[in-house]
Length: 393
Image 1 (cartoon, helix red, strand yellow):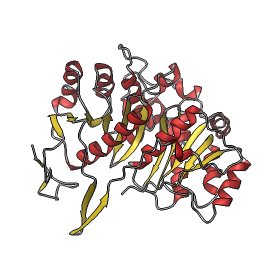
Image 2 (cartoon, rainbow, N blue to C red; image 1 turned 180 degrees about the horizontal axis):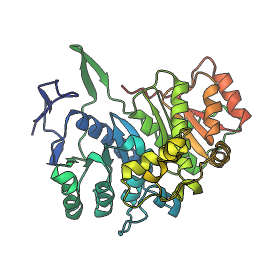
Image 3 (tube, one colour; image 1 turned 90 degrees about the vertical axis):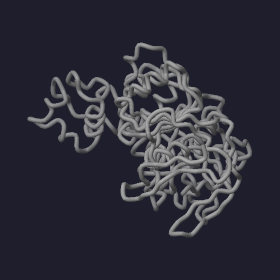
Image 4 (cartoon, rainbow, N blue to C red; image 1 turned 135 degrees about the vertical axis):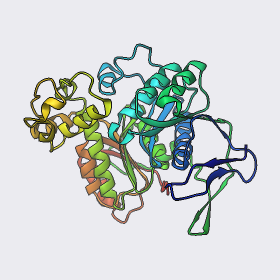
């Protein structure tokens, strides 16, 4: 198949719409559903991300995409009991495969942003992963294959309309890519930079020059994630998964703050008070996620005030105080941080440090590199200048 007609483009008024190949066959097969224009943008970008994560780490990988940027990305490391509970997979009556763990991590990093996402899997989707996907509000999934049991589970999702795409894992695109804007064609070489190249971590200008093996892995995950995130972008990673992604901001400090706030929320969801919230029976998953998000925020009274709390809780919980949040966030350590371009000021490091960042990989090359290095040295942060910019538009 060389061409696939779509219902419409980005918006219903943008017709006609299609995806097609100028030479050769489309590398995808729609097994179920009717994916749209944005679905395919998410699918093809997210597939590249998980394919590179798998190649770089040797571990199964998953990504959760929304509007052509990842809300979460992860590799298949085992989940401890705390993460199983905060990702709401502790009640699944099936063993979690490495791929299922990767998906749970990717989806659980930023559940608010992942609502209605498109999923990418680096490996053949198994029953355990399909079972987790079926429980969430999602538009579709792309993978190199599906077991018969997994396919049966996914085809039953969304009253049989869930989008399931199979991609040829051996497909290699042409080295030149093109896009049109306002009738003008843009052309460039594909970004084929290898982000697991050890040479990226040879230029370490900080006093602390020690990167643990886990830190290098997490920095590679951050950089690969950024390669497919709308710029400007910053990514916080811990234990094999993105925990905060800031995308599409004009100011880099706003990226660092946005991603840092998301990382803080990810960590706060593991606070004992949050994990023990007495939700009413039968509360919808989306309502529960939104309630947790508000409970953690400064607007906690919106779900705790009299006349409101009983809509969510069996009994009124105590608020999570500002002091308790600050104390808990301070316990998050050894976080890795990647940036898609250089940090222009030390204020980015000041903000990153508040969310437990210990390791940084960024392009370098700012006229204020000295200020950024000095700020890292103040907090004993190890930072590598990769020399590689990862703008993505």
